[in-house]
Image (cartoon, rainbow, N blue to C red):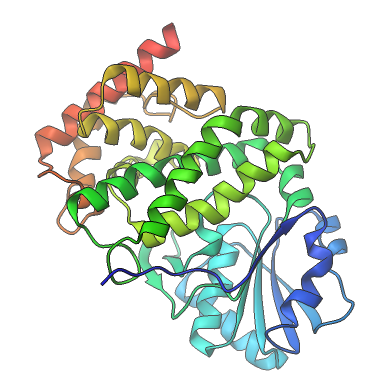
Length: 360
């Protein structure tokens, strides 16, 4: 079966937080917003209290562990809320998503950075107490509302926005691989034409407007280019990855994440190099991969394992490849049989091309 999933409603623009109560009021009467403790206080000034539903806030640490989900679920029950929102970075959004799933109540996703395509999805990443990924938890449905305030996201460090572009960059190439191989997507079927079109449009927008959008973000100016790329990072990439499928770029990310020295790097930064390795795996020409490398550099993304903080690259490549190809890993969605040797060769070729572009 071909399947696609989407958030019920998506709202994006400057001052969107002022519409929170009105927009959330479509789904209930009392909202509890779980708010990332790391957010600047002035972000909450725009939450909006007129019309729609009543809103209360609960400051939480950015963690999505089984214990944190249990605590959040209890807090929501005690509050009497019939809607829960996650307001902040990915872990707080996932915390709200997982708690709403337990209670089977509507969920509102309010990202304050655009560092990944997770806000629109039905996936909550659960961590252990040591901040290691414990499992991927797919909740019963996608967010009822995704509310994206362009002003808030443009005020955040541009590095987060660039990382979101890195995550979005993978969307088309992984979706294309899944369609070519017949692999399944993340919502219980195979990719639809709409998912493929969203993934392709995502790539077109970030490559055309990405460099300007990052510069605008650095200057904290919301422009047409910024809005276009923001939508690509969150909505188009979100639809594309979930309904189209994922592959080698994220598998290589998982392998890179095994190394302790990269833990300070963002998800999308690791994925960006993973895209280059995925292209080598699929026998793209040097010219095509060099073009992607130059794009990465133009938006502040790494093009080599050295830039990710890996000091012993040659010794680390087998470790990355071993994790990337383990049984059940998404690299096996690619339209070829991926072996240890093939994965290592892809990483080495991507590394060589990245280094050559840095020296050009």
